[in-house]
Amino acid sequence: MDIEVGDIVRVQDHDWDRIFNIDNEDILESFIEDIIEENWN
Image 1: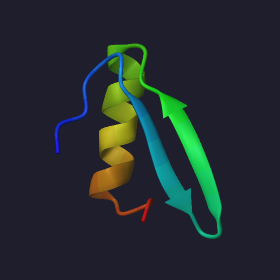
Image 2: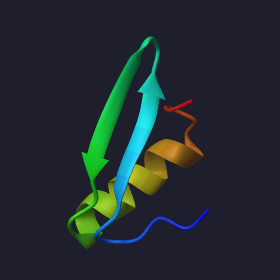
Image 3: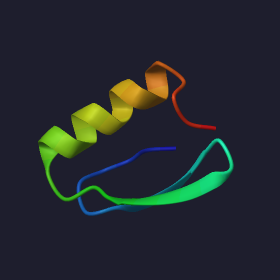
Image 4: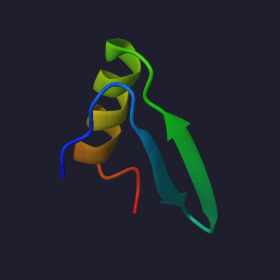
């Protein structure tokens, strides 16, 4: 799965669903770091 700037991503954070608008490179980089660190399910 590739995530790009402009995507809207839904993740599960414990028992909560969270929606992120990946609208710039900084948010994309931070989001990918969180995925690598397994902060999201």
